[in-house]
Image 1: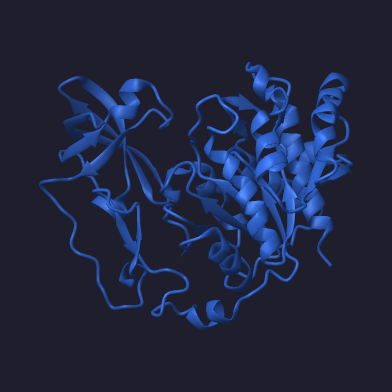
Image 2: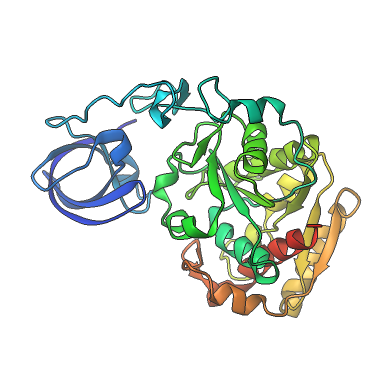
Length: 360
């Protein structure tokens, strides 16, 4: 289950918010490793590190990293527990794993936001865009901000992909463009910690003051190639949560004519499962104008069975290509850049643009 290695830090390559990339030598040779300082401390050259290399050795989606489990010879000091700091809460995430984190929940008794969260019952009609891949986040944001640059946008990160928000370089690059990040479920490392998608949505609205919220799992995802065996299918449950709380669900469709897998061409079978079977509440499903004719025909055919349950919305795309190219972070999905999978990013941006039109 766990493939362990012991190594020595040779160099610090680069760092971003919450993460440090390292060159490490082991008995198997050199490798790249990633450490989260809030969990293990700040690594320095010469430190001995204990590593989990399982996903790296198996070629799975960890960004090509071994993960630092501990600096055994230089453990960090215990965090201050004053009852009000980030480390002073009782919300346990990555529960019952060796690196479980104990954090201050946004709605805990010790939280400065407790009173707000106790009285929060509704999203007040806030548009919420749901997406099944983390890579859609910057494209949706680009669509929202294209026509409404002053809108406050929050990101709610579910726990279907990476658990630490710190893993995402995309999120690091968007920090100055978001009202904040809420990590929910087992995910952690956001500006606010919430135990459920429901409390996370309420925190985005009432604590971060969001006008629009984007819901998507962290980078990396779990999938078996079957219609139900994909962590992003949970976005259908997010649609239900938004509706229960009085928000406006907007479903970002996963559209592609570049994916090599037939099940993801046109509209991905994951979008069809999430919106067609899991989401019981009605959502707006934006479809961008200007798709290549063959792709447009495939999208229309795939969405026809969903038209009775959801509202299919056509969205003009004038200016969206420019907005995508002006993104403050690089656009990439499954290794494909904007021009290699234009339809995917255009669909996400169209969802963002439509959400912005719902604001009063």
